[in-house]
Every structure is written in structure tokens, then in C-alpha cells.
Image (tube, rainbow, N blue to C red; front, side, top):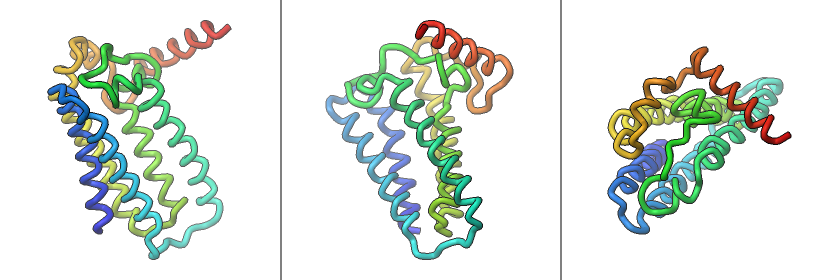
Amino acid sequence: MLYIIIGVIGFTVVHIFDLIALKKVPRLKPVVWFVGIGLLIYSLVMICLSPDKLVMPDWLTGVGWGVFGLSVALLIHALFISLPFRKTYIEEGVGEKLVESGFYALVRHPGVIWFTLFMLALIPVAKARLLLTAAPIFIVLDIVLVIIQDKFLFGRMFPSYGDYRRETPMLLPNRKSFNAFLRFLRLARSQES
């Protein structure tokens, strides 16, 4: 249970980083972000290494590895490639522009979707019984924290966030947002040619 508490603290610290970005506290933003991510990663590693293991069929473990790899790639893309890394995580203040394309045309918080898949895939991969408790806690905490960001912080960070909020669903894609995502993919593909 200690490692779950460390993960909860890590998640909370990661989201405090948005307040620091708004307040423009020099050099504190990347420190807080790296400490929060470090605590979260440490807790997940220790939870996965816990000795009490689940018994699962090999095919489920194989599916878990496939979903795990896909979810990690999508999570990294959504949080570190789609968003400008330096402006989002390192430099003082908030990013200059709200990202509304790619996964961010699909939903306002695509990281939650990919993190949820990641946590669910981690269960058959690590087979750690403690993940049966940790995964729902971390998923719910992630959702609660993005609701707080969505309602109280992002509108202050990005002037056009109200329009974006009205146009794009928060967590579950709809037909309109899925079509916007597909248009972005077609446009990106045509620009590559």
C-alpha cells in the first residue's frame, strides 16, 4: 500500500506543476514535474515487482504486452510529441498555443485514455496482485485531476480554451471529434507527400 500512496503523491505533484506554470515561478516547473513523474514511475515499478502474483494464461499476457506497447507509444506521443516539450514541461509559464490537432482533436485529454489502457495492460504483463488495487486508484485520480485542470486551470492558461471545450469532448470521442481527427490525419499525410 505504501507504493500506491507514493504514486498518489506523484500524480498530485505532477498536477501541481500546472499551478506553478500559471504563477510563472522560475525554475520550479521542471523540478516539480520531474519529481512527480519520478515518484509515479518508482511506485509503478515497485508495485509491479511486488511478490504476490496473479496466475494468468499466456495468451492474456501476450495481449497485455501488445496493448502495453501500443499504450506507451500513444501516451508518449500525446504528452511529449503532440505538445511542445520545452514549453510544456521545462520553460517558465505556459505554452504559447493550445494544441487542438491530432489526438487533441479527438478528445481534450487523450493522455487519460492512453494511461488507462497502459494501467489495464500492466496487470497481465506484471501479474502483480497489487495492481488490481493500484490501477483503479490511479485511473480515477488521473480523471479527477484532469477534471480540475479542465474546469479551473486550462481556461486561465489558454484564452481559446472555452471554444475548444465546446467543440471537443473531454474524454470520450464522438462522431464529430473522430471526423476532425481523421481530417487531421489526411492533412498530415498529404503534407508528407
